[in-house]
Length: 302
Image 1 (cartoon, rainbow, N blue to C red):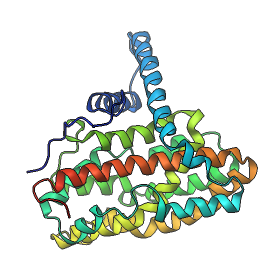
Image 2 (image 1 turned 135 degrees about the vertical axis):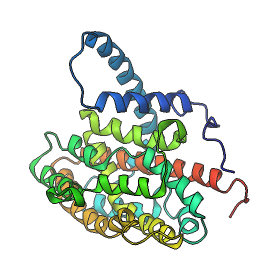
Image 3 (image 1 turned 90 degrees about the vertical axis):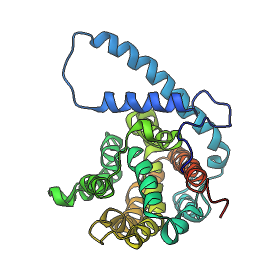
Image 4 (image 1 turned 120 degrees about the vertical axis):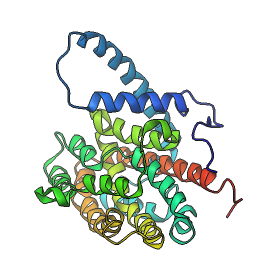
């Protein structure tokens, strides 16, 4: 049996808790959903202001965790690109034992649980890119536009990445809802949303999105291998097989066209992007540790 999703973390924090992350996740889904004017808009605005303050404090706590490491990142373009690309090997959560296990040993039900957590915590890469690109300089903005166009299937519904994820949800018959999701997965989505929706963290978001493109291919390939091992067809596993290949190109383009010119124009952006990347990786590492705890609960350490 899988471990309960409602365990509180050992570390004392106002923000790294089930209740806070679930509340923030519900608020994010509500505030970002298309809606209509309402008579109680002022009351809603007051609540939003309160939540924005809490969200900001949450993100500042995550920044404090990585600030010392981020400060070591070079602020010249060549040095920063080398430091950034090295995160694929040295960053938090890289080489986690969870993914070879998913590829080689996990049962269908265990893969289903893993995917349910990932799907429920998915913030929507396309939307994060769209929100991040607002008012960016020309070259980074154009690269985010190209990336977004790929996410949108070059204008065709069957090529969109979001519906591919939805199709896999249906194939695996999972229910990716907030109530069934571990807080660590919600924390990752909440952190990504916070950086993308607040302009004071725009460069953090560029770094966080860039490090996803950098580090995701290897993990995606191993998840795809596991899914096909338990009986899914290549078409059914397409969401992961696509990202195992496409994100390699995305990463190279992002580093060359978004990160490099941004740092060349203003070296201070390097530190912000380093913080964003490390926040994303640290949140991912928390997820992997929690997934292992839940999935390996009845089997002992691997």
